[in-house]
Each structure stands twice: as C-alpha cells, then as structure tokens.
Amino acid sequence: MLLKNTFVHHVHFWLNDKADKQQLLDGLNLLLPIPHIREIHIGVPAETFRSVVDRSYDVSLLLLFDTPEAQEAYQVDPTHVIFAENYAKPLCSKVVVSDSVNV
Image (tube, rainbow, N blue to C red; front, side, top):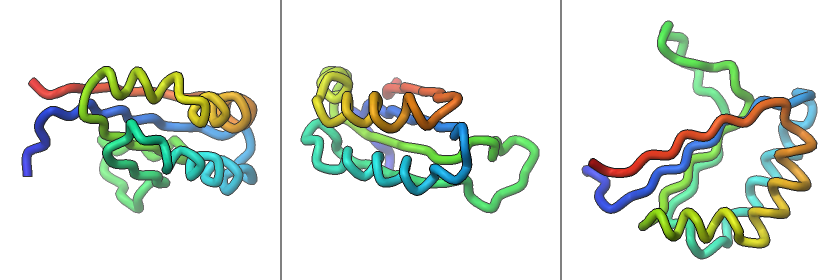
C-alpha cells in the first residue's frame, strides 16, 4: 500500500553507553500515548549485513503523522519534551533525524 498524506519522522540514536539501551527503550515507550502520532515503530538494527545498510546506531524511532502540523505539535508535546530532556539528551552521543513527505 502506498502511504499518502504522510509525514515520516525517522530518528536514529547512538548511546553513550550500550548498557543504557533498555532505559532509552523505556523512554521511547513513553511517547506511545501522544495523540498526534498516527503510527509508531521502536526498533533496533536488523540482522541485515548488506554494504548499504547502516547498523551503527543502537535504537531507532519511526513515526508517521497525518500532516506536518501534527509533527510540529508532537515536537512541543510535554511528553516528547520530557523524553528529549530526560532520555535522549543524557543517554545519547548522537541523534540523527530524517523527515520526509509525499511527493
């Protein structure tokens, strides 16, 4: 199925300490009730080893939104702010975000 009217927000996290993976995953699960999110996927690198696959990250977050405005509302949602301040910023050495929209 071709996704239409979708704003995709994909985030990759690199941990300062691999031992904190479960703590980051717990933090990501706090995002589940945010009403602006259409779909959410929390994951770790798959066991795929092709040369084009980047497996260097520790955890990923994929969010689907109905509109860019819904994604903007998510960014300032208090639960997201708590996640960013209490989990992502202190636990991660690097965070890379890729946003995309339909053409």
